[in-house]
Image (cartoon, rainbow, N blue to C red; front, side, top):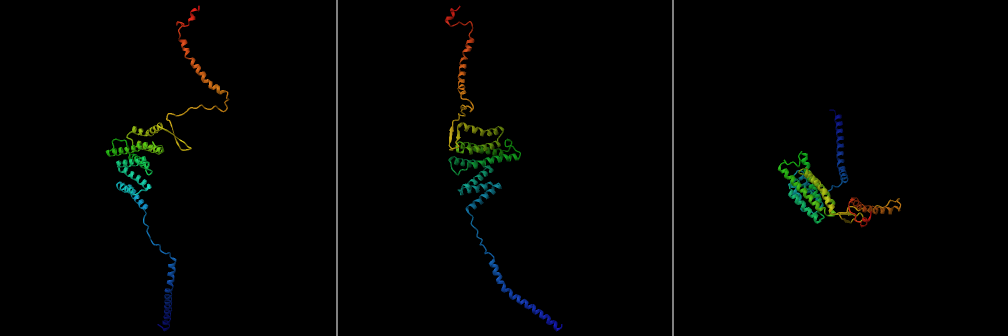
Length: 316
C-alpha cells in the first residue's frame, strides 16, 4: 500500500478517536446535573401507612359475612355469626339489621320454636314501652316469610291446601300458620293502645292477608280475610275516638251516639210569617188523630143496643 494512503487512513482514525475521547469526557460532567434536576422534579414518595380498621368497619364486614352465609343457605353459620354480633354490639341501627336477618334465618331454617320465642321477646319489649324495641320489623319479616312460602309452592305448581303433600311439608306449613297467627294476636293487643293503633292495624291487615294465602281451604281463607273487618268493628264498638285538629287531644264519644238530628235553619228567602204556621201543623195532626178512636166505637154500635140516655125513653 502506498505511504500516502496509509497516512490518510491514519489521520482519519486519529480524528475519529479524538472525537470519541472528547464526547466521553463531556458525558460524565453533564450526567450529575441531569440526575439532580430529574430528582428535583420528581415528587417525594409518600410512605404507605395502612390505617387500622375501626369497629364499624369490622362490624360491617361481619354482617356482610353473615349475609353471604344466608345467600348460600348456610343458615347455621349465619345464625351463629348474627347471634354473636347481637351480643357484642349495642348500636340500635346494627341491632335492627341483625334482628331482621336473624328472624329470616330462623324461618328459612324451619326453626319455628326459636322464631316464636324471638317474636315474643320483642313483643314483651314493645308492651313494656322500650324505645329500642323494633317489633314491627320482626313481625314484618314473619309476614314476608309466609308470603314467600305461598309463592314458592305456587311457582312449583303446588297448593298449600293440598292434604296429600308429604308430612314434612304439611308440618312446615302448619308451623308457619301458627307463627303468623301469633303475629295477628299480638297486633290486636298492641292496637288497644291509641298511640299504636295505626301501626298495629296496618300490621294486622298484612298478617291476615298472608295467613289467607297459606290457608288450609277456602273457608279458612275467607275467615282470615274477614278478620280485619271484624277487628275494626270491635274496636269501633268499644270506643270511638275523635281527634282534634286544633290541639291534638283525643275525646271519647259514646259508641251508641251515631248522629244527632237538628232542625235545619229556614231558607234565606223564606218569609218569617210562615214559621208559626209550620209549628202549628203538628198540633193539628195530633188533634185529628185523637178523634179517630171514637169513630169506630160509634160505627160498631148496633141499632138494637139499649140507649143509656134516660131521657130517650120519654120521646115518642
